[in-house]
Image (cartoon, rainbow, N blue to C red; front, side, top):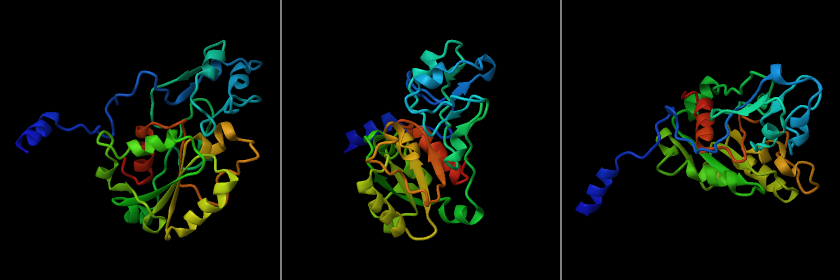
Length: 249
């Protein structure tokens, strides 16, 4: 026992501070994309043609839809003028799906919940996660939020097993038809007031599965309170969006 306590003291604190001061992101991390309109010829749409999900506007003023973006390098590699680059900025979430459609020089923003909702959930938020046909990439990053590095529980946010015990629903995956009724039933099982968080390109737009006859997508009648893009999003992106929604940043 003494040896275990000594080893624990030697390890010290392993949790990443938040807000992070220069977070230790992996070398291959791709954060907020930047589109330089000045370097984008009006008749050039090579990046749009290269994008597998149609995240880049192919006509009119250039724009980028983070809700569709897979954060793959195809557009950067295809752009002859170098107008597209990926930064290392992990702050990607928005308060709505529409808030992820960006013009050049724009960035997504998370608006804090109203005063009453912050009073209810600001220090204790319980979430139920539903994997609706995802590949488990987003689910793995959500699991990582509870490990010692990111330690979601220190902010009073936890995942629970039952929607009856939850304040909000976190949805991942493109929602195949076989999951649509189960997802809607889970939402209805949450007590009022309740929150909806969409995580990953599949939940936001269908991702690579958009247009498939097997996919119905997240029901449009559900109110979205937080949209977190990525394929999958980094735990710091998820954490930044959740805390921004709760007015903790």
